[in-house]
Amino acid sequence: MFEHPTKENLEGRIEIQDMEADTMEEVLCFLYTGTCDGLEGNDMETVVTLHQVADRYLIEQLRVRCTAVKALTAEGITEDNATDLWEEAEFYKLEEVKQAVRDFCWK
Figure 1 (cartoon, one colour):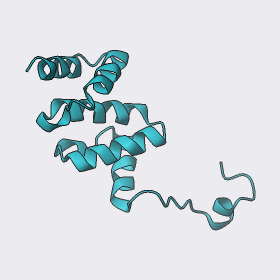
Figure 2 (cartoon, rainbow, N blue to C red; figure 1 turned 180 degrees about the horizontal axis):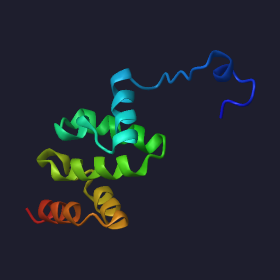
Figure 3 (cartoon, one colour; figure 1 turned 180 degrees about the vertical axis):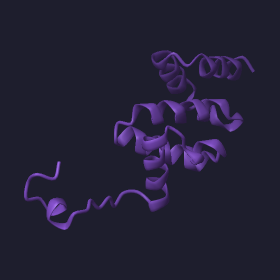
Figure 4 (cartoon, rainbow, N blue to C red; figure 1 turned 60 degrees about the horizontal axis):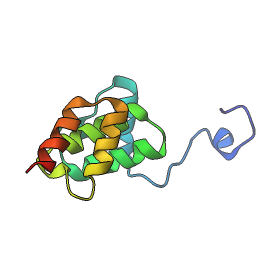
């Protein structure tokens, strides 16, 4: 990655401007350890932000975990996102998420 005379190679750093430092810290923690404190507290704003970052940078395991947390949190399933959550749950075989969507739809 740092073999060509790019700005990042010359400066020895990569600057990511579209994400807060604490979000990047959560993402790096997930990449290195497989865990993420931002998902444990079920703070929906953090989960949504992490989901967007995971989607943008193609971090599938983090994206799947965020999807599950969104669905398994009471306010996570809405009429607007139920279909999308179901499709992701079907694709990634997330049975708990599928059940949560089913329960929401049958209320």
